[in-house]
Image (cartoon, rainbow, N blue to C red):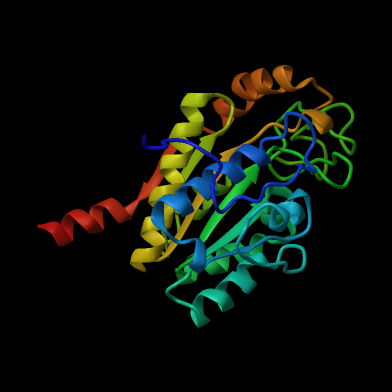
Length: 256
């Protein structure tokens, strides 16, 4: 009898440190499923910074590098240039990538660095106390915006659509946004991640997948309520799907 489903070999068998209802665990699982399916476990390296992402290396059963806050793209650049045949992953949250690490990521994408970023967007700072993040929605409450984010109030501004921003750069060859709010979107997100990894291993340039993920603790919600809030509020602002795909275009050109 053929076994069709089981625990991914690339995912450690340990108890999670993440809060109940957090999406990181689901994202870890689909990343490791793709790595196993592609046979890349021995050539996979993850770079994960400060924030809830700091725990990622506890769960991935392959090599990891833990750079300073916001500097993950610089570390991933160095690793990928030294080991171009390896799968190199930047695993970043919205506070890390869209705030302190913005310049690092924009310039890495603009240079067309050949690694893949998995950008976990839960619209808030998760580890440090629920402060307003660059992706926090208008009206969404945070510890630093107790009345909700107000674009007209000094210093708050608007939520940044990171995937659309990076998709404008010529060095970005693949960008997609998924979510882990239901089984259908988990399957689609896994497909985006696989396509990004395939594009990276083909050597075409910078690739990224943004994943909308619930944070019940800092949203002050129960897990089921957080899933519904993501569906009702985040997806209308951060639309799902492929945003840029030059990988498929290039493959078709080569096939022709």
